[in-house]
Length: 158
Ligand code: DLZ
Image 1 (cartoon, rainbow, N blue to C red):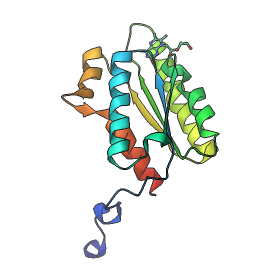
Image 2 (cartoon, helix red, strand yellow):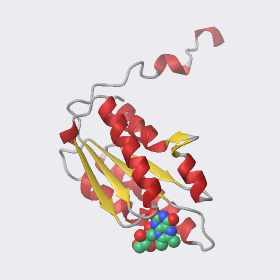
Image 3 (tube, rainbow, N blue to C red):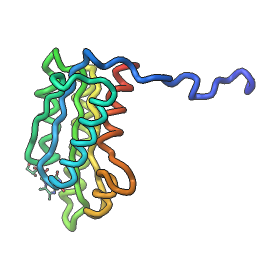
């Protein structure tokens, strides 16, 4: 009966779970550093605001988004790490690099998450232009690094 159905909001977490004992790894791509650096700042600020201990956040860089998957795997295989956040920015170019890298990273991150049965968050922007990326890295559309951090916290409270 429609009247007995709950609204989705009744199932979702009312408050984010306690993360003071959780350990996070953030893997960040150096390509498009202006964007990924801002996303990283957003992710760290949000984790800290939500109660993560500074000492429980480890940050590692990789050269480009293509390398995020292996970096995520190296972090996820550490039993002390509870969640991994991958941050990258792949800008649509004139070559097919964009398609290959985006597809590989999305699939790779999913595989790592399932392999280690822990949240591995896809904090990767795939905009057409650098301006669109900046708009989502602390600009007019907010900071997707914040959202990646919130996603990790929500998954830890599953
Ligand atoms: C090669 C390349 C290109 C063309 N564009 C991007 C990009 O927009 N964003 C990004 O994170 N990385 C890019 N890369 C680098 C690849 O991710 C990777 O580092 C190299 O192909 C070496 O494996």
